[in-house]
Amino acid sequence: MGLKEQIKERAHQAGFDLVAVTPAQPLPEAEQATLERMRSGLLEGMAWITEERIRLSCDPTRLLPGARSVIVLGKRYPAGGSEDPSPSCGPRGRIARYAWGDDYHDVFPPRMERVVEALASAAGRRPGAGFFVDSSPLAEKAVAARSGLGWFGKNGCILTQGHGSWVLLAEILTDLELEPDPPLQRDCGRCRICLDRCPTGAIVAPYVVDARRCISYLTIEHKGAIPLELRPLMGDWIFGCDVCQELCPHNRLVGPAEDAAFAARPEVGPNPALIPLLGLDREGFKRLFRCSPVLRPRRRGFLRNVAVALGNAGDPAAVPALASALADEEPLVRSHAAWALGRIGGAAARLALGRALASEGDGAVLAEIRLALG
Image 1 (cartoon, one colour):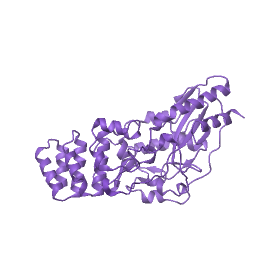
Image 2 (image 1 turned 60 degrees about the vertical axis):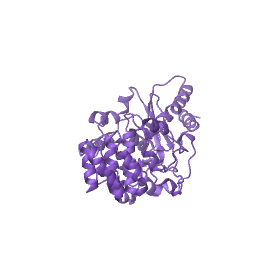
Image 3 (image 1 turned 135 degrees about the vertical axis):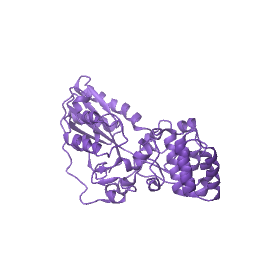
Image 4 (image 1 turned 120 degrees about the horizontal axis):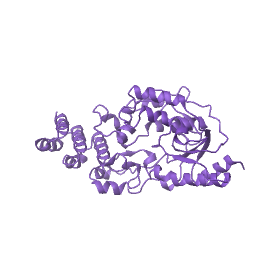
């Protein structure tokens, strides 16, 4: 068994479903495309994406001096789940499938270390190696496409054979020279379902996503108030969005995935009841989503999302919880609770808004309350 085959075998043993190898060479096309999107405003709001970071992410040798190869790893996550049909808990929200369980930023590094141990054993020395998992500066999708692990879908996701786009990526840069795998000669053909049916119209052209309109960006990375015109389009998503993946023909025949780390938490599930979530205090939020990606927008951003989902659900049962949220310590939560009450309407909602109008001191929240009453 050759060195690359040993690495792939150990990677599968460590829990990864896909493994491919590509040279640690610059990615000029990815660099140019990302720079153009940043300059055109499509990445507005992502302050960490700078021209220097883009150039850094597209040159693996700058990330690990002496790097010769990139080992690209793919992990399949759950592609389906069951929703409790009982109406007793009121309206429910949706969490993107990759975030049902533990945070892959924490799950992957120990598994990647096992792959490096295999490298050391086979090579007779501890190789130079660097781990990259999403938040680290490496253009991972471009690397994955060049490695043959998958190919770019028109929604910007990497599509793979057998696992569709329900795949999380990670990379190991190494100074070992490994035989590369060839890219896949695949594309989406004439299909444009993801473009035509994105709820907010975020996929503005094939392979081009306007982050400012993407529900995943709005519910996770966006720190402030969600634009008024986009709130009704967000439906019941409270963390991330899977719509373009659910519609993708390449995902229709993907079977179930089994990995305890990514299974839905019993106390939350894939479709949690929204009204109890709105009552979470800081400690309750941290406790419920311990080790989960859902912690990323913090309590204020998450409860903002919950309020929007409740407004879109339009269920009067949520009015008492939303009325209580008008007294939340966070203006961001109060303002979106006001919007939701305006969407639901009714005497009880207007009474709560009227009372808040008399006591609110934050200008942005007052504007939301007046709009809701109007």
